[in-house]
Length: 104
Image (tube, rainbow, N blue to C red; front, side, top):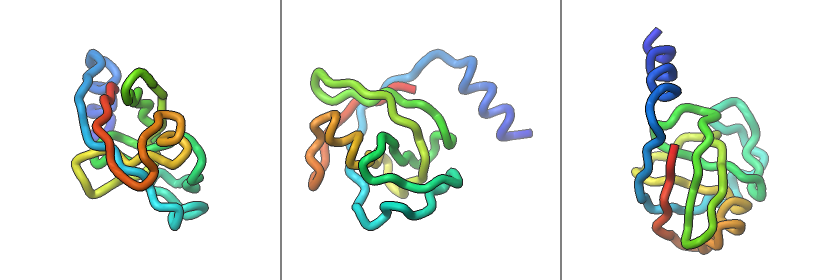
C-alpha cells in the first residue's frame, strides 16, 4: 500500500529538477542483473539512482544536450550513475564525473 501511495504521489506531483553529480557505470556490470529485474546493457540508455522507483523516466541535461533515461538500478551514492551509452550521448566523460541536471 505504501508503494502505491508513493507512486500515486509521484505521478500527480509536478516535475522536479535538481543538479547532481553524474558518474558512469563500470563495464564490469554489462549483462548482469539489475535491481529492476532486467539485464544491464553497458551501451544502452539507462541509469541508477538511490531512491527513484524502477522504470521511472528521468530527463538528464548536460550542457546543451538532453536525454531521457530509464532508472533500472540502485546506486549507493547521492547522485546518478549513467550507462556508457547515455554518458556518450550527453558527452559526460566515461572515466570521470560531471554536474548534470535531472528532472523527474
